[in-house]
Image 1 (tube, one colour):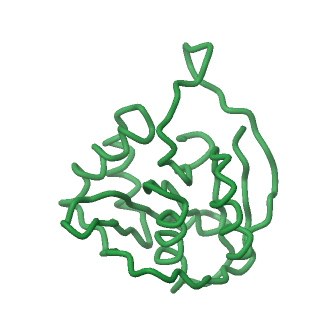
Image 2: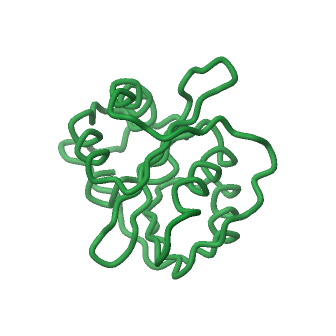
Length: 161
């Protein structure tokens, strides 16, 4: 299932450890796409380029050696800011990416997720998100959704995954 969350106001939490977050650049898209392929299990480079071009905020997360280990994007929708995709190794880092993406903006936020990671859902509660609705995941030409590695915390949208 996909769960749609809405936060009328985003409330940043206290992420205690420093994360190596930086603004995403167009030059990062190839590396973002490789990481996304691992998390999503499909090649979405064209969607990611288009999403980046529409983004009002976009960040990359690097480890202490400078390797990209996560990313996130946020676009302005017709009603809400829409956070996603967000890819990270853990819920903590996914929450840190969300905080960086949304902490400086204003207005309501929408986030779609298919993860059942309880820690991530607790962060969403702390940030002021409330469950809005649930939708089934549909996959074209498959009987079963391929297993994922647990790094996809927020979807680009219900339609794009």
